Image 1 (cartoon, rainbow, N blue to C red):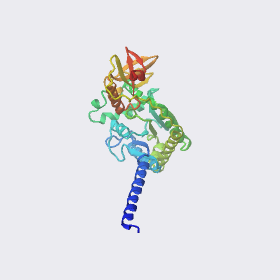
Image 2 (image 1 turned 120 degrees about the horizontal axis):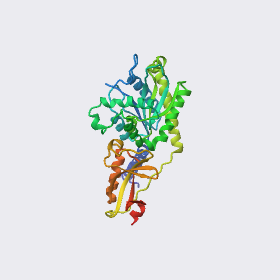
Image 3 (image 1 turned 60 degrees about the horizontal axis):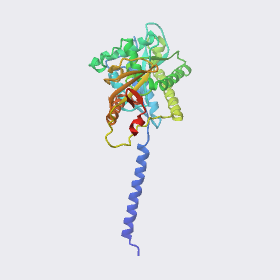
Image 4 (image 1 turned 45 degrees about the vertical axis):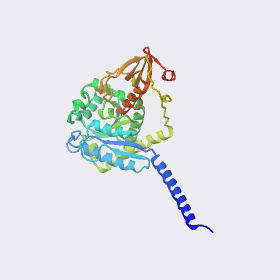
Length: 366
């Protein structure tokens, strides 16, 4: 005779196990997903109205375009949209970058409008880099001038002067690792503006924007048109025009993401972590390399995300920038974490013996 009570308990136990397993697998599926994060930044806001124009408000136009763009991107399952502002409030430039960095975003897109004293028209998309001419610098200088509206801006930006070409050039190093991706997105944005919207194409340009410098991911700043131009200003101020601008940017972001999905290759430098005892190596200097490039930069904190004590070295025509120095390998790993937290995501440990660089793995093995 079957013991119904015992059998019932067995079935209930199995059901609990099955349900628990299904719940676990469901959680793994959900939490294992990695969304493509896009930070949308509507320029200006609150006490900062943006570019002066007789009939139009840059801060309102930029916000409207960003909200429409965000709505379109939100409809894609594996894209997460994050706003630096979704209403008319003032957000300082450093905070905009912090929002993007803290989210570990994949893209940062800042939306603005242009202005000039003539009937100039057209769109242009910027990436962080050397301003090739005075006009690019003037655009960057205007966008950067918002820091003067921020509280304690002198302390916050480590003495950075947005009116100094030399200081702005110094900012460009941080984004060198992402320049190719930023240029790729910027070119597709301009293509869509030109081909789909028939706007005047003023090109992809490089200049020293503080808001782009604050981020450590591919980043662009879009000047969607001139609100001082009679017809273009009316287009930008219209719901139809704002939707068309948003659609063009949306298409470029989709194309950018598709390219990444199909061609992305991630290379990471392995860091030995197989020894558990104290790892102090007399006569060896471990350092963290945070950047390299052809430009000679003053190793001051404002050029390196506030990091103090950065060293510069020139090797075969390329400048290397190092942060920290210790013969204790575990301590230098903490320094590496600090550098990455500051925004240098690709920072890695290197080793020197008698002032000559040696293979890190050779030192650790010994």
